[in-house]
Every structure is written in C-alpha cells, then in structure tokens.
Image (cartoon, rainbow, N blue to C red; front, side):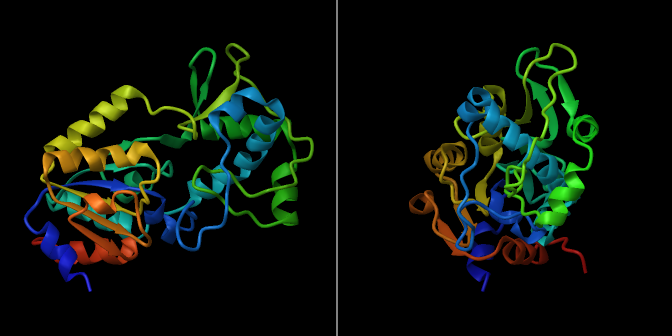
Length: 275
C-alpha cells in the first residue's frame, strides 16, 4: 500500500510538517478530520476581550491540559524519531501543542504554535509552567476537578480545551508578579506565530531535500506557507492525511492514510530500521 510513499521519498533528507492528525492515535482528537466533531476554538480576540469567555476557557483548560499532559506518543511520533536517528528526517515542524514529538525522542523540533506546558502573562511577559498554575487553580477551586469529571467524562480538543459545560463559579487567577491576564503560551486562532519561529521553520525547509506533511489539512496559512515555499524550491512534496488538504495541488504525491501506519512503513524501509 505504501510503495508509492517509499518511492517518492527514497534517498531524500526530509523536513516534516505535522498537524493534529498525527496525534489522534494518542487520544487527542483533531479539528478537521473525517470523523472530527464540530468544535469552535476560542479566538485570541475573545480570550482577551471577554472575561466570561476567558473564565469558561480556564475552567475547561484546567481539565484539558491534564489529559494532554498524560497523552503518550504513538507509532507515528516514534517512527519520526527513529527516522531522525537514521539520518532521514532532518527536523519536524509541528502545528501541535502536545509535545508528543519531544516525548517520542525527536530532537530537532519547532513547536510552531507553542506548547500546552507553559503560561505567559500578557502584561509583563512572565512565564510559568502549566503545572505551577495548576496548583494555584486547584487551591482557588477546591473539588472542581473531581466534580466535573464525575458529572461528565472529559474530551479534549487539540488546544487542550476540554469539552465541558459545567463551569459553575470557577475562579481564575492572575499573574502573581503584576496582576496581569494569564494566557497559555500557544498561538490561538486570530493570533500570529512569532516571526523568529517562522523564520527558523523556513530555514529548515530550505535545508531539506524533500517535504513530508503528516496529518495536517493545511487549512490555515501557518502550515500551508511552508508547502508553498517548498513548491517554489521545486523539491518533492508528499502529503499523508486522512482527507484532502489545501496543499494537494502542490504535492508530488498525496496519500489518504493514517500517519501511524504510513510513517511506520517508512521507518521499516529505512536502511537502519530496527530488526
């Protein structure tokens, strides 16, 4: 089934772009896959402009971040780490915030949209870990987590936002240094990726001999621009995704398949694949 994939990438050093579709096998649903539920993620403008929406978001994130933190890499993540060790994958640019590439052992990773594991003050810029904030939120909302989970199971979106309607009187906390608004240190819809991070990602595409997209519909420009850049360089572009993408017309090969299966096949065919 994956002969065309192997043929299209044989002998090339790869830069890989990943999206939410690579993490579905780890229990983190995507936004746009064929079986994805309809979700409307909070936007940056809503978060900073509406205190009530912000309170509801933190109530849901208080549960969702734990689910994401507990998620473990799947075969697709492990295959990319193995391909990096084999000298086939140069780097991974991920649109995901779940840190699963790093947990799997990939060493050269750009978390394009940031990660769930840090929180930033929008006023003074102070950074704290999400675990440290969890302690403060637990103290401010005793018993909330147990009650919410018991009343309804937790489903988590790719932005660590749990599907939860019972937010009650959840109390937010502010920056301990300046009293400013705290926000997860990842890019929301309507927010721009930091320019230095984008520049670093373009450099990785420039270094590569081929571009592999795994598990992204490329609906948003943050990922699609790298595919367009690779097309201008006239290097092979291979897209593995369970549905169509915005980059299909630029691709050398599109393969509608799961990332775990496809990337595992690529690793198995590598010269130094494990026995």
